[in-house]
Structures are given as C-alpha cells and as structure tokens.
Amino acid sequence: MDMPTELQHQAMGYDRAATMFSPDGHLLQVEYAEKTVRLGSASIGIKCKDGVVIISDKRIRDKLLETDSMTKIFEIDNHIMASSSGMLADARVLIDQAQVLAQQNRVTYASPIEPISVIRMIADRKQFFTQYGGARPYGISIMLAGVNKGKSHLYTSDVTGNFFNFKANAIGENDEKIKEMLRNEYKEGINVEEGIKFGLKIFKEILGKSFDINRFEVAFIKSSEEKFERLYGDELKKFVK
Image (cartoon, rainbow, N blue to C red; front, side, top):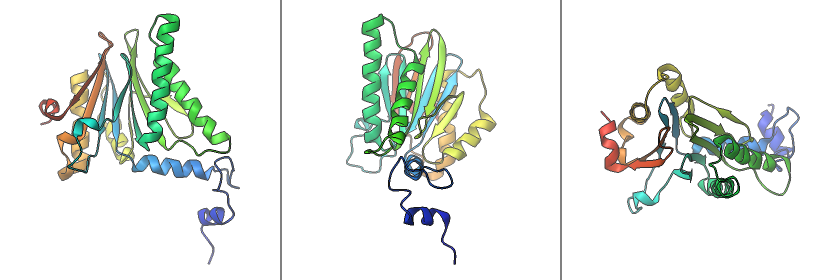
C-alpha cells in the first residue's frame, strides 16, 4: 500500500522547516499555518458606498469571561481598523507594529497613513517568516479596512504574505461558505447600516441555532467622518430581523 504524499513528505522531513520546499513545490509549514487560520473565528469585511464595515464573531465559549474584554477588531488609527483569524497572539504583535507605523506617519508627515502602506508592512513581515529559518510563519490572516481621501479600502493578507483588495471578503471558520454567499448576494452601493445587516444575516444563516448576537462585534468607518466606531451586544439587535 502506497503512503499518501503528505505523509511521505513528513517522513522525509520536508515539514521540519518553513524554508524547505517539498518536491512538489509546497512549503508545508506555511500550509499548516493556513489550516490554523481556518480554525479561527470568522470575520466579514464589506466595502460600502459611504464607508467600510467589519463584522466579527468573537466565539465566546466561557460564561466567566467579560464579553467586552474580548476584542476581534482593532483600531490601527482613526481611519483604519483590522481583524484577524488564527492565533490572536500572533495578530496582536502585527497590530502593535501597524499602530506604531500609523503614528510615525502622523508625526513625520502630519497626515494620516494610507491603508495600503499598513497592509504592505504586515504582508512583508509575514513573507519574511516564510523565507528565513529560525522562526515559524505567522498563523494568521489579517483583514484590514480603512478610509482615505473619501475612498473605502478593504484588504486581506494571507499566511504567505500575499494581499489583495476586495469589495467584500471573509476569513476564518466557514470562509468558503461565507464567500459564496457574498458572491451571490453582495450588491455594490449599499451603505454602512445595510452592510451591517447583510453581514449579520450571513452569520445567522451559517450558524443557525448557534447564532447569538452577544458573540458578535461590529466596527465601521464612514468616509465623511474617517472615525472608527465599534458596536456590540444590545447595540446590534436593531440590525437583526
């Protein structure tokens, strides 16, 4: 009986270092990190005509936890926010670096940083840890959303260090199911309030009986104000039918 290819590669040690390619061109440590991302709780990002919104499932399972201490959406600057899926400790390190970069830009140039500059820095850091030995890849996917000069931006960076601009996207658990629903139902020209309703509607369909509004966190930035705002708990009930 032939051994499966993945087991052959493990037996031959191709998964012992993030820098070692397998014979069929895979970085196995990177692929393992991608599996970690899919085990993380989901986030949906939606670009709207008047801003951008992120809806995140905090997936709180311990009744002893204070729900407002669990944060899945981070403020990078007044006009930029980010969410992640995977190992949140890994995400926190990159978010801290992104916040510093944003503040350095304000001090140096007296202007807000462009969202693409932040996601490029994050993606570069991720790529670095797939190319050099001595450290494992970051086990996270980061979704970054922001507003600059009246225009909305939504980027997603994967484990490898690639990043792309999206109209709407999802990361984490059930991401393929959510993306399929976004492809079928997303309409350009919706506003932020409609985007929140749309994202929560998708989560309600995906989670079914497990849906609980208290496990979600929503943040948005409107183009006219360029100000980060967060909603959770009872504040979200008006967006759910």
